[in-house]
Image 1 (cartoon, rainbow, N blue to C red):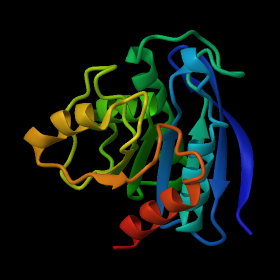
Image 2 (cartoon, one colour):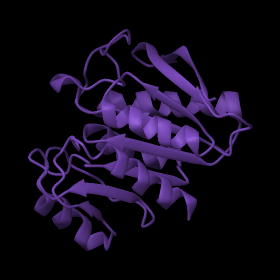
Image 3 (spheres, rainbow, N blue to C red):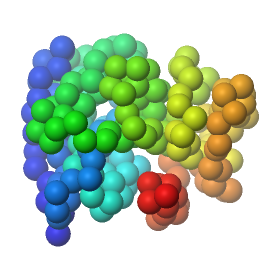
Image 4 (cartoon, rainbow, N blue to C red):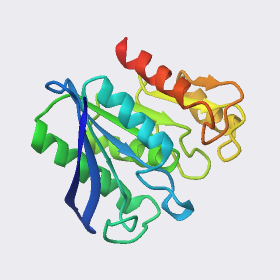
Length: 201
């Protein structure tokens, strides 16, 4: 049975609150998951974040989900994505210090996907997983060709057309869940299966 433990680690804005999930055996890699927009209630307890955590730990990854600055017990205040990039970097450093230079999966939902995409030049993930990334709401950078991007065609927050306009020049593959909304109501099992299959390839 996978275990989890509460952690506090140091970011540039102060202490950050997180949860580390440990697989049953020696980890095959490490993963850091970023949550959706703090100003709209996003936290590390978001159901898509916790679904990603359970999926990744089930695949053998030591996994960190954490609260950005100003959320929950994390110190600091919302910084429009700029300071949050530093928070992701601090989370990746925490995991690398504890588990070594294992392959890194950088995952994020909505705003968290935008932050992970920005942080990638510093964190150097082996694999990125972006669930309904906040294209159009924030200036998304380009991402590696092997990035897993999952979106719903009924996303009411980030229209699929906006995502495709961003992805097309990069020739990115998109996994579109028909009928899914931004928060993937009643589609979490399917989301789990898509991520699981991708990382098993």
